[in-house]
Structure formats: structure tokens, C-alpha cells
Length: 188
Image (cartoon, rainbow, N blue to C red; front, side):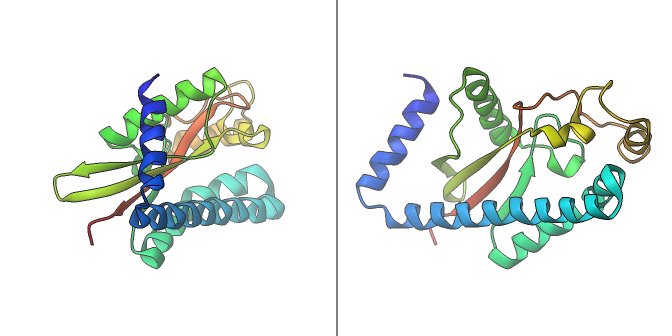
């Protein structure tokens, strides 16, 4: 049994023992991550309708971090998008997130990616729920995240100017893109 399967099994055992704090935190993490994904998607679709992919990528670069900050403020918890191949430096994962992203990517390549992944961890200042909602590249994402031959000249120029260190291209539909990462303190 691999480490991810063991962690998932431990979570189910914790839930079976009635750890209501964990279950409430999982419910909140689901709600926040779903809401964040829906808000970013809605913004992208709105901007796509206004002016195509260049307008959408422009809005995403300007509005996505504002949407994330609004969710952090509204719910009072740590929430953000993270990716190994980030476009915006603010989406760079910490060491813990990077390890989980690598596991989720491997599970996706094996065809075993769960809809969510979470575990309870002990940190230097307490016990936390760490929750991840995987993000998968959809066909429409390729217009801004696809291979070099798939990207339009306008998009390439925008990315070169706005994100000279961009790592978020070269994807194919179905690839693991990253995750929404949520961290909730359980010891309060």
C-alpha cells in the first residue's frame, strides 16, 4: 500500500472515530475550494465572452489573485491555487504542497486521481487539516496553457511580457495542472 493510500485510510479511520472537527474542516475546505474554482471559472468565461482568450488571460492575471484574497478574507483561512509549473510566483507551492502535488500528479498519470485529497498534519504550532482539490487541464485551457505550437502569437507575446519566467505551458488535456490548497487549524 503506497503512502497516499495509507494517508487516505488513516483519514477514514479518523472520521470513523467521530473526529467532528476534522469533518467540519473538510466540509469547509470543500466549500471554499469549490467556490474558488467556480469564481475563477466564471470570471474566465465572462472575459472570454467579452474578448476571447487574450482578454481571458489578461483578466486571469489581474483578477485571480484578487479572487483568492477575497476567499481568504471571507472564510478566514489559508486558501490558494498551487502548481509545480506555476505562472504567477504567488502560486508557487511550499515544500509540503510540492510533495502532495507530486503525489497527485503521479496518481493522475496512473489513472487513480481522487477528486480531493486531505490529511491531518501536526505543525510546529498545532494540528491542521491540509486539503487539496486537484485541477485538471481541460481542452479549452490549452489556449493559454498548451504546447508552444498550440498557443497563438498574441498569447505568447502576452505571456513573455507579463510572465517572463512562466512555467505553466506545455500541457495536454487531462494533465494534472495543480490544486487548490486549503489549510485549516484544528486546535482552536
